[in-house]
Amino acid sequence: MKNQLRTAALLAALSGILITISYWIIGGTTGVVIGIALAAVTNLFSWYQSDKIALAAYRAQPVSPPEAPGLYQMVQRLCDRAGLPIPKIYIFPSPAANAFATGRDPEHAAVAVSEGILTKEK
Image 1 (cartoon, helix red, strand yellow):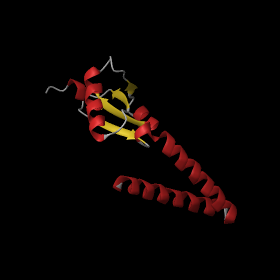
Image 2 (cartoon, helix red, strand yellow):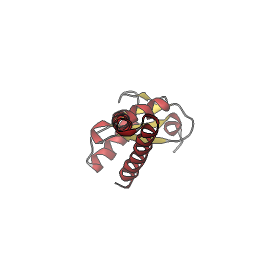
Image 3 (spheres, one colour):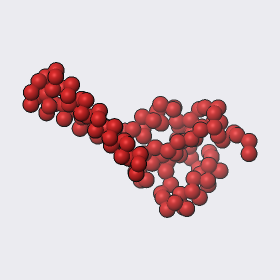
């Protein structure tokens, strides 16, 4: 919940900046309306596409259960314990042991793990 509040505060601040800039450049009510419209479009785009952007930035590729059975079993166990649906799973090229989760809600979630974390000795 804390991260959601921080994200909302950041988006509100950025929206305020965008509306202010539109007001200064275009002027008056028209500038404010255009700023609000741009902020709404930007926020909606961010809400629906941020997971895809993060995965693309890491060059993550989707992986199927036959390709990474151990990874799928681990994610399955964690999701069962947490009462969450299984997210889409991705692997990204990096020798470092790293992983992240992204998505706007549990039904649109993804987990990405680095190649390095999969090859790390136990």
